[in-house]
Each structure stands twice: as structure tokens, then as C-alpha cells.
Image (cartoon, rainbow, N blue to C red; front, side, top):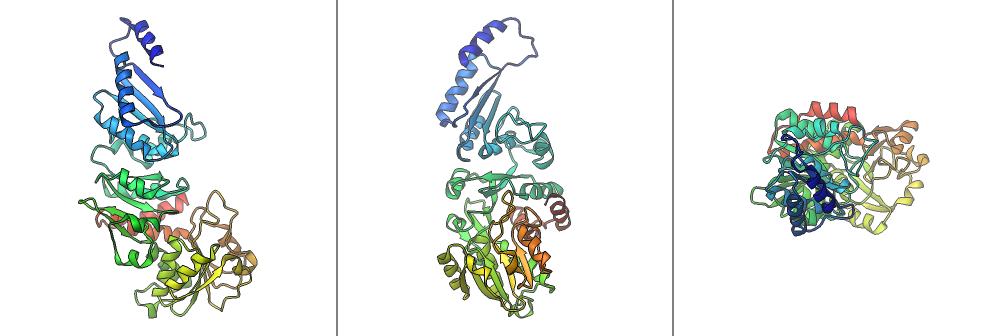
Length: 414
């Protein structure tokens, strides 16, 4: 590649217009080399006669992007550094923060030339890339999968509305601890955690608030100025308040006044969201049944909240008492697997209220089939908005979340 560039530079010798800049690029479609190898490559491209150096590599893990950032920020010549694949998306969005000469967005989402490319509309309207600079804080959702999430749209528009200098990214990770260790700069100041990392996050944080510690799951991480990570759980209040309002009563900190008090709630799942719902329901005075595909995990969670455990398959013939609430805390039915559902339709008619933590799509198969039986349903969008309000305030150091704007965005994009 560089031999071709060398010949091209010789061909242009003496004929290049004064205002013309020569970009020489190198593409690696398999991996991202070490920092030393990248730096050597940049030097070789510069020696060829490039005015602007472009290096594009491929991320097999999101931590690969950190090596490109390290080379970019220390580069003494104009440099374009892009990391391809969905795991490399933040290299394109954060290019201005790390001194990139330019980044690249596509005009049509259906016509990509490399994986992980954002659209021009996303760069400008969602990520507000024109306002990203060296002092911009980095926030994001750490999850796998992550592209179905509406959190980047919600948080970015709300951050922009209050003038907070931060950008919120979808972060497709494979190992939470490695991600947090790699991106340990104070500028990487806060993260949402979703499937499958909510329980792992407990072990990654140096400190936990009382609720998160009791639940044993974290959906919000904030990096303090001393570098320590603090874990919170806003799923708990988001889900429980949504269910309480769905039942028909206003939420209350007093368990005796909660519409959940004395009721039976069947929680489907045993992961982070299920732990939050089970803990919250118990705190509000409800009796808890936990149903999960892996029975042993159902037993562990049920024991933690003084409840009963069932196998997921048992729900087909389970006959709950009158007034029982069903709460799905699994990813069954989530985009793109929209045909999934945790409970057969015929069994839904025995419940008083059905709640689904999944919000993409807004009306899941579970909610649609429950509604066909005349059962009251509560969409995961309510939990999504309410937990996001708590996260926003943690991320911004206490700025009040713009609830009306959040609801407007959620209504538009879910």
C-alpha cells in the first residue's frame, strides 16, 4: 500500500496545487494492532509524504478502540483514526475529543461501506458531534446486545437540553471489568449497565449505595473524581413505581400504603432487573414468586426475598390467586426477537396486571396477548423513563431530569 502511495506522491511532485492536501490511508479489516505498531504505521505514512494520515482498523473488542485513541492524541500530524465494526463506533463519535482531523458518517443507513458507521443525522442530531471537544465527558450504555437501545437518543437530547457537556454512547462490550479498567480516565464519567452486566457490576464497583447493595445488581455506575466507581440501582424505583401506578394507586415509600402491599407478584427471570423488581416488591409488602428457566437461580433469588421458586415452564399451568401481578424481567420478546414471550397466552388471563420490562418494542407479544384477555398491562417504557431520570441525575451531579422531554422522546422513538 505504501509503495503505491510513494509512487503517487512522486507522480504529483511539483504538480500538487498549494491548497490541496494529500490523505494516505491504511485499512486493516481484521484487527487493531498494538499502540507501537500503530505509531510506526503513522510514521511510515507520514514519511511517504502524506499531509493527513488516515488509519482504519477493526475492533474485535471495544477495548481495541483505546489504542487508536492513544495514538491519535499523541500524533503530531493531522490524523484520521477510525475503528470499524459496531464495537468501534465510539472511535467515530469521539474523534473530535481525541484530536481526529475528521470523522465519517453515511447519508443512507442502508448503504454502509464498513460496519459500525453512524449516519450523518445521528452524528449531528443524536451525538451533537459539533459540540464534542477535549473536555466533553463520556457516558454510555454498556450492554450486549446494545443497538436496540433508545438510551443514547434519550440521554443525549436531555443532556443537550440542559447544556451539560457530555455525550452518551452505545457501548457493545464483552467483559465489563476489562472495559472499566481500560477506559479509566475521569472523562469516562458514568455508565448505564444492562444485560448481561448488572450483576457483574456489583463486583466492579468500589462503593455501592444501600439499595444496590441489597438488591445485588447495579444499572448505574458513576466515576468519582478520585477514580472510584460507585454503583446505584434505579431499576428498582423505575419498575416498582410503574407497576404501582399501573395497579391504580400512587406509589408510596410506606409499604402499608402501597397498592402492592399484600399482593402476590410473579417475577419472571433471575438477573439484574428481576432482582430489582423482587427486592422492590418485597419492600412494598408484596409476596414474591420467582420463575426462571434455570431453576437453581430462581431458588437463590426467591430465598433472598423470602419467596417461592418455580421453573419457567411451570407458569403454563400455574393458577395464581386473584389480584396477582406478572412481571417479566427477561429479554424474551425484545427486538429483534419480537415473537418471544415468557408465558403462554392461555395462562395470562389469570393475572390482574401484566408488566413487561422490555420496551423495544413498546407493545411486546406478552403485553399484546395479555391485553387480548382484558388484562391491565404496563409497558416497559414507563420503567425505561423512570430509571433514566434517576440515572440522569447521578450522571450530571444532581441536575433535575427533564421528565416531560424524556416522555416526549420515549413516545416518539419507542
